[in-house]
Length: 428
Image 1 (spheres, rainbow, N blue to C red):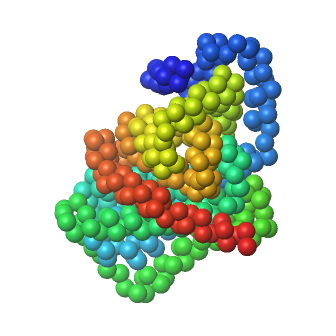
Image 2: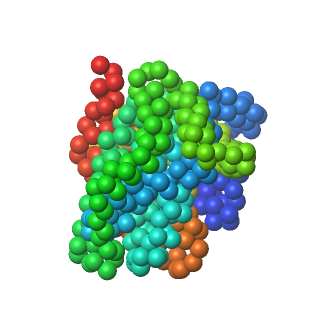
Image 3: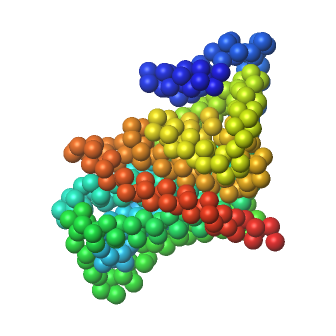
């Protein structure tokens, strides 16, 4: 049954069937082939129960927050400020790409929005200064992945929804690994540019006056981070309430900066509805698929297989990591999460691993899938913003960052305290 399900899934995805329709079709086919009960009769109740969740309201609100920041151009000032502080390092503007992506990730919650925004701001400047397009575009694509690790994160909300894990604890757990990964990106970029300077660009020094004056451009992003994440960590707001506070804060900041207009609001709402519709359809479709898989016995089948293989906890964990890396080459990230987590997470957690830590590890592996071809979404986003040049440049430039992410996954397995320290602190 497992092989049949995978073959049907890959066939439908290769035929370019929309993801939500693919999941529903797969569920109906598996129900017909492997279940003695008419599971289709429960479809209405299952889809309604999946969509009737208060927590899901946070998703469109976080998307709207990111849309407002994108449309109002707040990220441009952030990029200029970080350029003045980081461009003296070997690699020059490459570090501004990563640094800006890190800050923008702390408010957008979306990797795609982060990559698109940084690409729009950085690529023209990189071309004008003669940067090698490979590592430059790769740093933007990789920096964009931080959007689903550093809180607030839509993908962490999805993980929490699927596993019934505390969203505030997941947000707390993602902070240290997310910042450490950003630091590893910067150090890795510097080492690459020291080894091969032609891949980077000129190191530019700015006066202390320019650096200090540029700090004002960081205030909007840091203020929104304080509003959203601070209200969650202090217990003043739930993730959904914090998202609404973030939207109000973004609107207020944009209005204060005189960058808000009716046209921008309409564009932000339009983009939010399109993205939200896609995500929610995928989530409720996956909910029905998971119901069918459980009813047909695939979860028991997979559990029996792992138990029969005589594998220990860490061997099973390594197998799960390998599974995510392989599937990440072929399946879009959100689909990969909602298809695998309800099956993989109970098995791994049942072996004694912390569910919050596991969520951060899975998100890290999902980040790798965002920049691995052929379906790495951030690669296509950066190439689309780039408007010219071979797609292979972006793929080659992202490969060093895939290696850094894999190294980070090993660090997270060896030192789980990186993800569990802040959640444990919240409990005390």
